[in-house]
Amino acid sequence: MTDCPASWRMPTRAHLEKMAAAVGRNAAPARGLAPDDSLPEEYWQALLTTAGADERPIGSAAQERLLRLRQVRDHVLRVECRRCGRTLEIQKADAVRLYGPETTWQDLSQRLLNDTCTQRTGRYEEDGCWPSFD
Image (cartoon, rainbow, N blue to C red; front, side, top):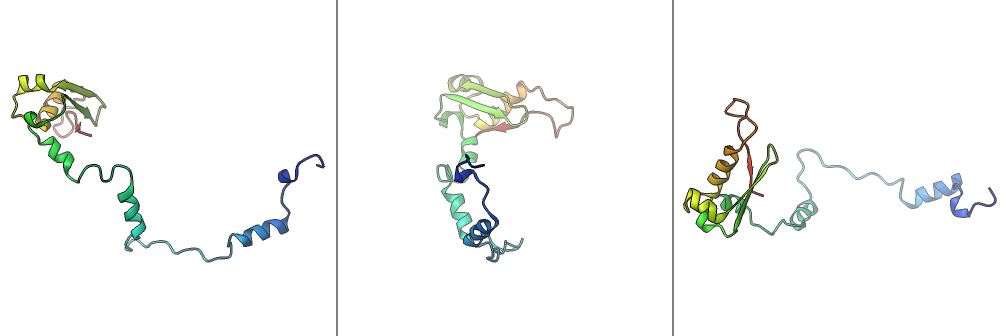
């Protein structure tokens, strides 16, 4: 063991105790939160400062779904099914021509997914695709 560098050697018991005392091993652990305690302010601040938290105001996704086709700014409309993972795209001009400018984006996306749905069970509650507008 003489040819091993000093950094590779196992520390002695005295050295381990010295390191443990240096990091405050004997300090009392911090008390955790009880189920009915309110969350600390740092938690809420961290949620608000995460990426994308302030990009879209709350409720803007719901407002986008209720837009009429004439109000939608995108040229390609894309909807994904949360259930089977399929993604459908249609150009806005084709959607307006086929379904009319007053059709809501939510109705159009549900109609597009239902027309090509492969997940049929026979039960009303389970049939069809579930659109995701994200």
